[in-house]
Length: 308
Image 1 (tube, rainbow, N blue to C red):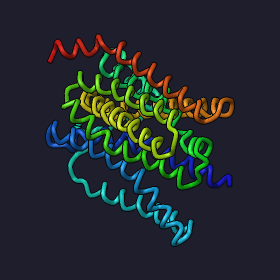
Image 2 (tube, rainbow, N blue to C red; image 1 turned 135 degrees about the vertical axis):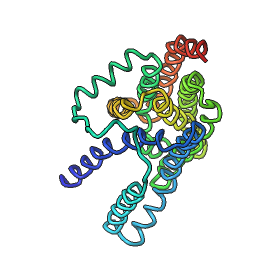
Image 3 (cartoon, rainbow, N blue to C red; image 1 turned 90 degrees about the horizontal axis):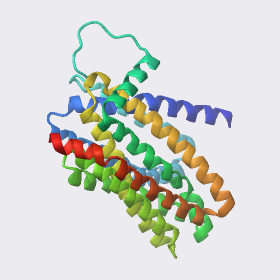
């Protein structure tokens, strides 16, 4: 069992290297701003679709060929992905000369934080995911909610998780159409998307049957998917190339920590009051943080409008 935990920890650790690097490279691979918008929407949508489809396919594969074969197939997908990335010939960052800068994790992160303090737009974009994460710990309770509220087994849990994936897949496309590449709109849509997330989960908490709960979760993650993708897009556009990777790494670290704390809190609350009440509480909490975000970023949006 300990080997499984160590392996899972290593996977998460390496993902923390890969994801910010990929996100920082995309602006240099896109040929124009419109392609960057489409690429981000596609990244967000493909993640959501594979959350819904991949889990189902993985279950069928494991049932047919066995769990060990499923792990081997999963390893193969990572190898294929690495091979595809290796085929990219275009530079993933701007040329800074032949001298490679030394790796300075603490100093590099300090530079990213200094940039956020100087640039209120970057600070607002970093805060977007953090405020969203305060209520997003409710996602960790979906499986428990399906069992406690509807006495549903694996199928019921699959419905709710699949609904989450569908919403996360559609949300980035809808969000991108509303934002239109305008950073002022990006901040506004991020806040509104958080409200959509909260309304969806409050509706899920009141759902009388599993189908209504699944539809509510799907609606919630229209907002969740849009918020996640647009806040990343905003950082890609706003952060200078030489600091973009550090800013996105900081964003990933902050959201990971916030989600972990929120998920632990949701679990503790669920033990005391039950899954249905926990979903409702965190839905209200998400609404409060999203409203606060919209109010606190009004000045930043006004500044962006004045320089547009």
